[in-house]
Length: 496
Image (cartoon, rainbow, N blue to C red):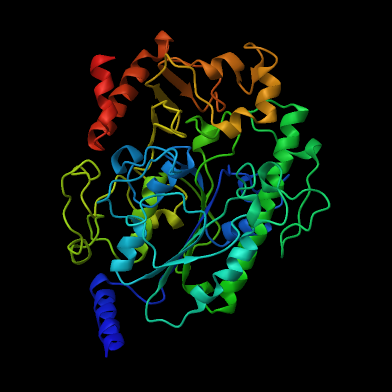
């Protein structure tokens, strides 16, 4: 009797929310991956399954994270709120102790209350669990996406009146190998197995020649850098094989034609010049979406989207948003209103987001009104206080380095990166991409870049009189963004 009552409740919620049982969702998030794939114009790397997804879906050429730090970025992905509003300023690890406000409502919780069954597999890296609550945590080796796909098969195939949401997160191609006690060997850079080891079950390692990789303009073209990129490519190819296995599982279970698939990364490659920065190497990220119900396929769109748009897009697909882009009242009323206290927030109301749905953009090569994104970064690790705010248009981009008198702080893995250490040993004037080692470490208060003519951000125009009006216009836009999103750091305009 209890099971029957529960089923009736779920059926009522599904009906009230406008959901359909065939609207399943998979959000795949890789760890520290730039838009490096054949479908993104890089023929040096082998990503046949991701390329196939792009041919059958929509590829975003202008997709951006809002903060190039793992935990903080994932909090944005799962809430549709910038981290300065959701409270997840940096890493979740116990020795960093960052987590979201206790009364924030996240994507899996919205979907659960709207009639979905929710599961996660792989990297989690957000807190508290009460905010980011999934119905099921599926075990799996996050360095082996094929293993993850196999372990998710039962969840995908389960007979249920509820549609499913699967949050599928790899640790590839993050530097290092995670907990070596969980693996049959200790991985080297980017999680790749040591020569002669058994490697990962179900994975055929793809080895790359450093001489044949593509070095992006924000990195130095040196033998050391090329060797690291070859290692990174190898890890990306491992992800691609797991993606292929996930496709097979969807076909085997009869869910290929009723599942929305979103493929993104939390932010760019784990190299100085990318991860932890809000330069293009850190912000610009892959985003490929396959809506099974779209008629147009193989779309390449220049619509500018960011990770605050993901939660509203997914909820839109699920039928959980109203015409104003907010979560429907029948779902929101299930959540208690914000209470007082240091671990709660009154500035972010349930059902509202900083982003908006880009679902209608999936069949459009260009969307009007999608010409700006914003970014907000405060910490990575606890010792890395370096708040930055960004307004990013199609041509011009402004970075406000709020703590600019400080040298730029390094994440522990990036400081030890051989590419960085090799250039750092050459002195402050040594080149590092379009910058020098010295200019990378010590930054001015404002950095203004013309991305059309300077895509790798080597020439700061903030002090150029010819761009004074552009600078002031973008400063005003930045302050408006901060006011709209209740950014505490807006106070810095007044007293510093």
